[in-house]
Length: 367
Image (cartoon, rainbow, N blue to C red):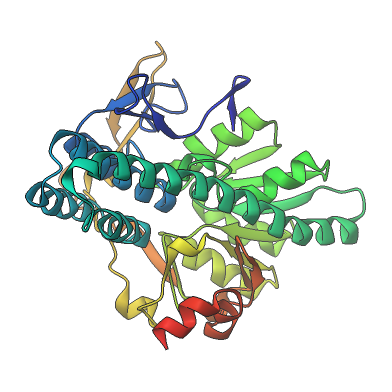
């Protein structure tokens, strides 16, 4: 996608062709800065500190982290060490585990002298596949928005989204935002209500930044405004992303997603989840019981970071001194609240049978 007219991916090789560059998302939306990753430890820190975030991008960053390790030391011991190091960074997004398993499969039986080249090739392939999958999600989600636009006539289609599931969360295009970008480019009038997404404000900071750079009309709203907007007919459809989806279509996404799904059901608003198949955990059936929910530092809740009047970035305390803060990063939306899943292979019902209809090879393996 583009920032100030220049095409970017969120992750790409450096000029020396072995280091890796990422957009530092902790600096957005006020400055666009690149961070260079030269070691697997750099990649692990970038993931855990949310310099990079979003399930697909986390997976690709981890893959490149393995490649950085193989460039320095392609031995079995280092491969084992780095797989463990990266796996421990964040627990909820299944793309991380998926990417590391794929890298291990590609490298384990490869002679050490060829491992670095193989690792970079595999990580690069993952990046290209993710961009292609997200573009396909946009194509498959476009007819849903086209149908709503036809029903509404000339009025804009109002979409509510939660957190950031755009190109910043992936390599390019994004998941939940991909159909919106496709609609915008097809000249379908579309307007997005952007949840601020506390505590890190990924909606206000990242989704709004993306949509603004792409020229998509949008309005930032507080997290708890969604139900009110739906009650008054101001939301035509909700589209969110996913960090892990079970084989039965339960969806783990940024905390607060579950509440939006409940409000959508109560008000008859379609609630779609957009995701690549790499985000499906085919080993799990019960999302509430089985998906590990990351508990992040309470300081993310008690303090906020923003731009001061003098233009500098500052952190300020917003909670009462001495208060303890809990900070679960995700919640699980049961499949019964999800209208459908938008994937790179098409749209399906949010059910085991729906997923199996699009990905029969996975369903057979797990049966």
